Length: 188
Image (cartoon, rainbow, N blue to C red):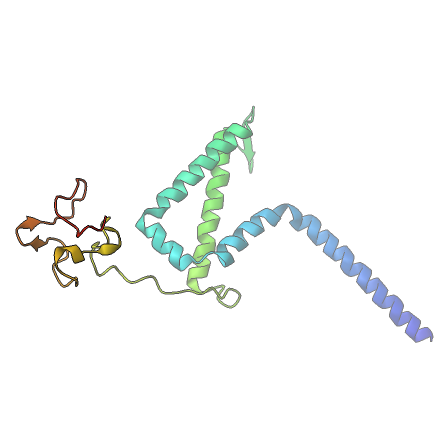
């Protein structure tokens, strides 16, 4: 029985040591958990294939404006009387906040770069659908005509030229800023 008691005592000491290691790790990593959560969100929860398409179409302006707004709000809500100390560099409070927000944006894009490179594809199985196909109608959609389309003009298909239309003597241009002078077949 002496060997069994020694084994149980050793397992108890091992469990106590593991709890001590876990407590020390949480003490060290605790202040970094918001940043780790930020990185995890942008790396695993965001579909960067789709977001990249949005950013290339001008969405980067929204990112820039949100970052600028965060700096302004943070500087107004938590003003500092003296300069900020960033790694020994003394900067004004708004410059310090700009550095921190810029670092968060850079880390966001680095996480996206890692996802796009396939680095985290083993851990992250996002449904990376291909981008939607380009619009083959060249912007010739509903144009505010409602659900009746162009059937009031005497044609049911869109086999006509998508940019200018000749409908028997009246012009049907794509400028719909004024009221239509032609009849839509009573479907308003």
